[in-house]
Image 1 (cartoon, rainbow, N blue to C red):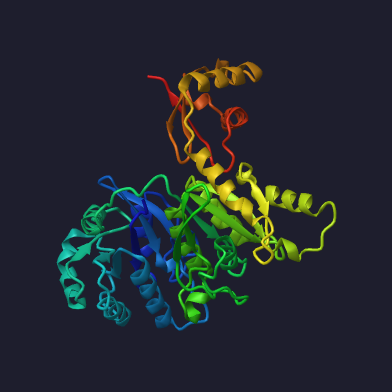
Image 2 (cartoon, rainbow, N blue to C red):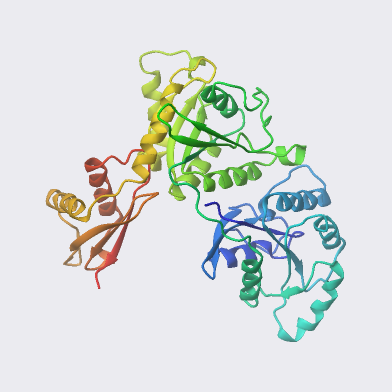
Amino acid sequence: MSLPTVAIIGRPNVGKSTIFNRIAGERISIVEDIPGVTRDRIYATGEWLTRKFNIIDTGGIELSDEPFMTEIRAQAEIAMTEADVIIAVVDGETGITDADEAVANILYRTDKPVILVVNKVDNPERRMEIFDFYSLGLGDPYPVSAVHGIGTGDVLDAIVQNLPNEIEEENENVIKFSLIGRPNVGKSSLINAILGEDRVIASPIAGTTRDAIDTHFVDSEDQEFVMIDTAGMRKSGKIYENTEKYSVMRAMRAIDRSDIVLMVINAEEGIREYDMRIAGFAHEAGKGILIVVNKWDTLEKDNDTMKNFELEIRTKFKFLDYAPIVYVSAKTGQRLNKLPDMIKEIHHAQNLRISSSVLNDVIMDAVAINPTPTDKGKRLKIFYATQVAIKPPTFVVFVNEEELMHFSYLRFLENQIRKAFVFEGTPVHLIARKRK
């Protein structure tokens, strides 16, 4: 089930990133008292009263070569498009500015819930001063001090109250997958080739596809798929086209909705930083991953071309050593017939459950091959292991002391589990827990 989205907007230097970090529960954006300093991650997951939601800090969306007010307007438009709930942040120290009124005027057009947050209200005696902000017409202002955490609980209560109602889980037998990658790697052409018909506009001009398109189809074995085409997933207009972070944000939402992510790479251009970033998001989200190298027909090849390209992929995507690679051509149809079967195999691996007895036989054999480590004379003891979740397969290993379980040994156990069972294309999570 896709998580609802909360977007934080406001003029520079009102504390958007500090509020973002408070809600996300960790410091994941650069925070300095200088306008426009946000350069880091703008997308995270928050949770309050058992409700989870995605949160976007629009201040991190860089809109270069645009006037100041145009940037603010663009960020507000992005929030109105992407979010289920909008947090409008103003500065309680400086009071209402023309920029605040401009943001409010834009938000009047939205039918999304808007929560007005007055930041930097550190002194309780100054809380009476927030009543000036009623003139913005955005409802009751919430006084907070994001730096000290004052009032953020009230804001989180308001967020949860305004989130859309949770819906029932979709049919688990349907495999949902998305094609992720930089503009112009051929995602739309791949979709057309897979379906055998022109469902989306494919063009050599980067960013042609403007909207997400979900396509349902069934293969010859009656397996139902939902294909989520992100294909740049960009809105028209220069201010959207020129921001990579906006594209990353849209890709993140598609990843969130997917079971499996097809990481599409342009064989002509090779691997870029953007590819590694969004592949990292998919890995962290525990999604199944298939690396698809498109436009393979355009390369001049020798006996080592495929081997060298795979070496580059494995070097730059070290964290995706479990992900299979397929070399295709949307133009000629080369190897496209393999994609549905590979997606089904990854889906099977994601949902694979291992009985505790068989799992513990594998763990004990692993310990016999490579005895557990010691630290300061104390040896790690593994009592037993059990699977606790799927999508991705997650195992808890009960030990005498969690601190003795070094990362390298946990990785060794993961490799032994992968050798014993087919988990190709899916992350595998191992968690050490002290036996109580």
